[in-house]
Image 1 (cartoon, rainbow, N blue to C red):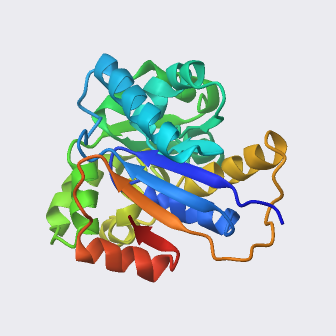
Image 2: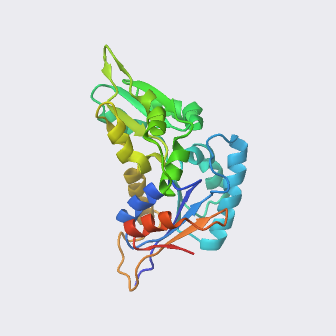
Length: 271
């Protein structure tokens, strides 16, 4: 009987749960450890050196504790800063990162006017601008750094009331219109943002195509497991797969968050 894959999904907060959900669809057999560095959240305003040192230290502890087959960095900010250092430091474990979905957004757009909704740090980094130059040369690209949106998504997941006006203020700069047309595609370049997707759709001044990178990330995780580690897609198991949550703060998740997780994923647990 084949052993289930052990996948570590890492984010600064709860946004990576959007990726974890898609990984679960791809690998329903897998044992997943979801690790949130809530003690360091948010990463967006942090200095790059701080992020590299912080994530490296947390990752060393997680690898020692859980010995994952693969690690998914389900955080755009962390991925654009620490993937190379992590791969150099931990060569025994494959890493899959998260990058702004500029390529699929440019491909999907008919108006060739797209927006990238991200944290201010992701918008400012050369990595994002290089992706724009490489994959969206034929598009007008509106880069929007939303300073509060990740925190609003976290509050929403914790069951707190989040005002529509606050969310609309963060997303409004994406909706650019001019003589040549208007934005028709928005790349969600922070894994927290799909947590608010229904609200985005409801508040949008006109319909747009929202690009969630999570399904593509999950497919890549599955591909690496199959190709690099020679693990079958869905081995037969004698027991249900599990999902364990870890918070660096040591705090327990709220009852609202646990209810959400258990409704979405019966395998979810908090240990």
